[in-house]
Image (cartoon, rainbow, N blue to C red; front, side, top):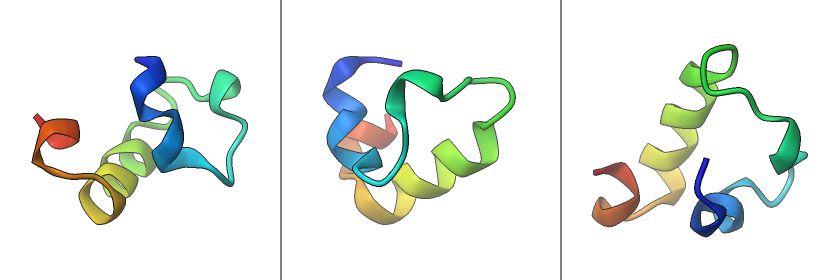
Length: 40
C-alpha cells in the first residue's frame, strides 16, 4: 500500500497489512477515515 495511507491506519501495524488478506478491513477503514482521494 502507498505510504500516504499510513495515517489512516494509526492503530495498526501498517507494514504487516496484506492487500488480499485484509482487503475488507482496508476498504472499511478508507471509507470511514479517508477522503475521496484515498478511496479513489
